[in-house]
Amino acid sequence: MTVSVSEPAPIGMLGKQFVRYVSCGRSHSACLTEDGRIYTWGGDYYGLENGFPCLGLASETDWAQKKKSVTVAHLPQLVKSMSDHFVMSIACGGFHTVAITDLGETFSWGTGDRGQLGHGDNLDHTTPTMVEALEGRRIIAVECGDLHTLALGSTREVFTWGAGDCAQLGHGTKTDLRVPRVVKALLGEGVQAIAAGCFHNGAINKACSVYTWGAGLYGRLGHGDDTDCTMPRLVEDLERKGIRCLAMGLYHSIAVADNGDMYTWGRGSEGQLGHEDKTKVELKPRALDSLEGQNVRAVSAGDYHSCALNGDPFPLPETPNTDQRKCSIM
Image 1 (cartoon, rainbow, N blue to C red):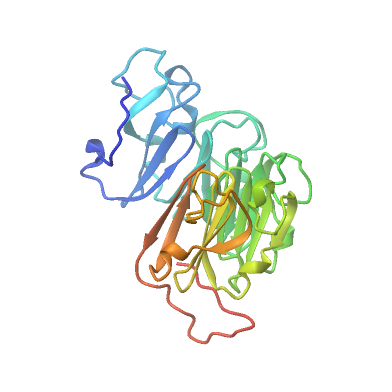
Image 2: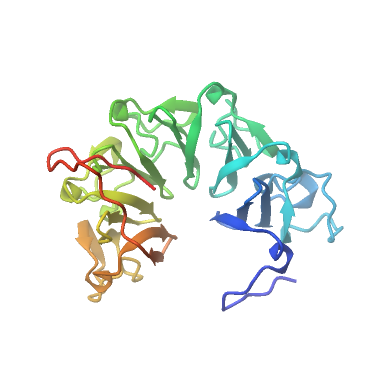
């Protein structure tokens, strides 16, 4: 039986694990432990009969629940097929999951109906499968949208694949892609960080400038209008702000500067922008006065809510230049 929990509670099964990262999809979650192992849990369209594709557990997994009608894994389960790899990063999409190993290899699994797994087809994969199109590329970061995926290479190029109907792939079209393709508009930008919303994305370059692309409804791209962008476009209002961190939700976006200042834009009717006047829409980035001086250093965005973590300020560049700031992402 599924029980709702209204307050934070420890997950007993992970009590002896040192969890260093957690990611959540629409109805499933994944965590990464200090020793590079992956645990997944939650719901799935398919469930036990077809191996819980987005959980990566395959059908041979031992379950406490034996009925084939089960569609929820209530307890975290070890993704055994990745036990021979040391996983460095993991990301959950709507119903797919992507992981990066210490060798820079990319594995994906789950629902593949829009090509979001990057295997060249629209098939589901119940166990982690290497993305062969990225073999030989050392991937250092990955982000998942609802039906698409972004990856950042060690040479700072950005790859995207999956659903493209909302312009979220950044290639100048609204066409789906079944295999990763480099975003040409960002070549030479020295991208330091990437972020994926459900249907829009962002990137920070070596000068701490921000580019966004994808669906523009409610001004979530920060360009002052609600127009879709099929290619990355500079967010002019964040220039010279020293942006270090980005987060994208369903209809809103968040940026954090190196001095800890936080900016939000897009739809705010559910309070996700954090402004006291409960603004409904911000077409351009707006500083969040309520967190001034809090030294925000990390943010996360859900569909209709946002979270921020404060702490020590980001270290400033050793030799800052007002025209071209070096941006070192933590």
